[in-house]
Image 1 (cartoon, one colour):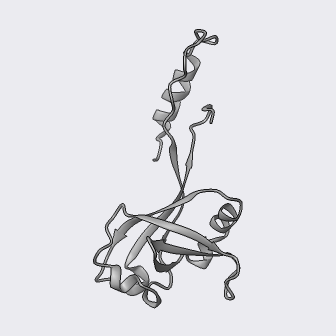
Image 2 (cartoon, one colour):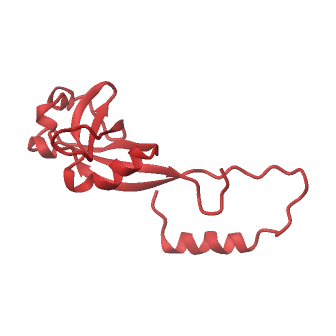
Length: 141
């Protein structure tokens, strides 16, 4: 979810209009979570795993599972990309440092298919994103 500058200022001004002391016993309205995009990438190694067999079934918006692989012999920061039980490949090495660190600390990083292009080269067939769910500023968990 991206926020424009105008929406940000409106929200900020709206916060200033809130009463300082709320009514006793009133439950606060739950705030919707924000989706913070961390990375956008094409899945690396797609042709070497189960990706080619699944490419016709993948759709934009499909959820992906991201798993850190600290024991990976080629890259200790490797982050594997799964669709259900099927391994599709990896987050590219140049984009996996932050994701790997967040996953190692127990954060829930969500993946999602952004685009599927079966006619493209294997390394460009599936574009995905990694995002973090976060509460809006000022909201309490």
